[in-house]
Image 1 (tube, rainbow, N blue to C red):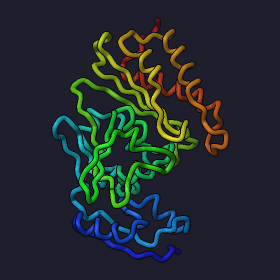
Image 2 (tube, one colour):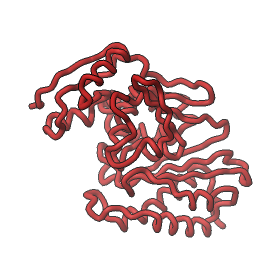
Image 3 (cartoon, rainbow, N blue to C red):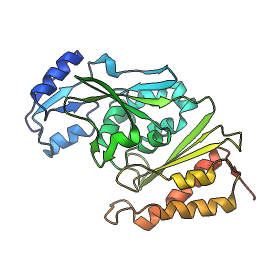
Image 4 (cartoon, rainbow, N blue to C red):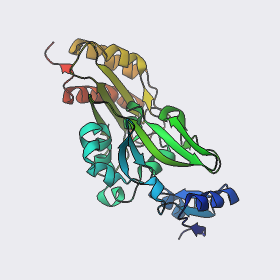
Length: 289
């Protein structure tokens, strides 16, 4: 049984902001795959649900002004099916492919996954490593916020009263490769024990190559290790260097001991292994040296 609540489905932004202005405790419904569970379990106090799925402003995947823009209502299945995401933003494609089951991917949205701000959110590390931006809209206009500033803490993002997440923007680079890898306790629908995204800009040019790494489910929010990124950029990545990289990655995280899915020692070991796997697949690791 669900807790009783009022339900509204505005068709315009004006209607949306009128509703949120009247009730600043209203809950926005995008995909609903997390929210509906909370309602059923009666763990959310919200008495008003505002369903934004009829707002076309928040839909679609398009390239514009040097960015790829994904509307907040873009489903995980739409991300998985997008050719430009599969070919250019492969870490996002990897995350979509790993996300739940087909039924959930057809319902869940990128906006909902990000606003929920779970430490192990599937799209956390891909968006951090891709230097994504959150496009937030409210009655006073639009704000564009770097993802590492928008995602503030566990279940907490930078949304003011009456604001909603409209889209995620990703910079477009001509020469870019990326991968996302995760571990879980069982195959199929299980949250990640740990996730790692690796990105390389200008990958074929060793001197100009920039490597970026983000880790998830190891801290309160996705985490990028800038020291390791510097170690891996502009140089040949050898097995000897990889040993030092793994040590730095392990030392830089302090997973909580109360995690139900894996002990801290396991996570500290696996971030290095997942990074190595991604480097190999991207052709960045000089094997045999």
